[in-house]
Length: 115
Image (cartoon, rainbow, N blue to C red):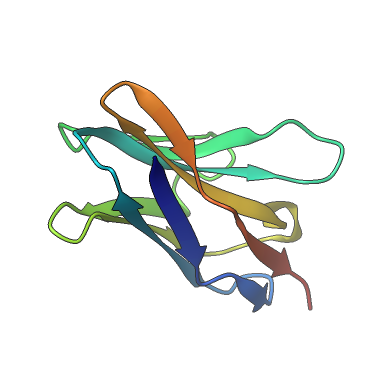
């Protein structure tokens, strides 16, 4: 099993910035890719950002140009820099990883964008 723990969520004003972090631990074999998803009650979980082993970054259209994903391969961490946030970004954010072909998700961290 691989465990992922998100941190950095909280309340932020529209137009503000927030940086989410995710730490991975446990029985890690080989990380293939890492990313972030988000979910609001009653909705499907949507993919927000994804970073491949070749450092290729893929973003949902709704966050492209505002969010930036990055990773630290030594520390087994992935980050999501959220800039110019708006109320539609309010959700529980989850990090995920493909470890040797198996997907794992964290417990989530709440992000609320409100004035």
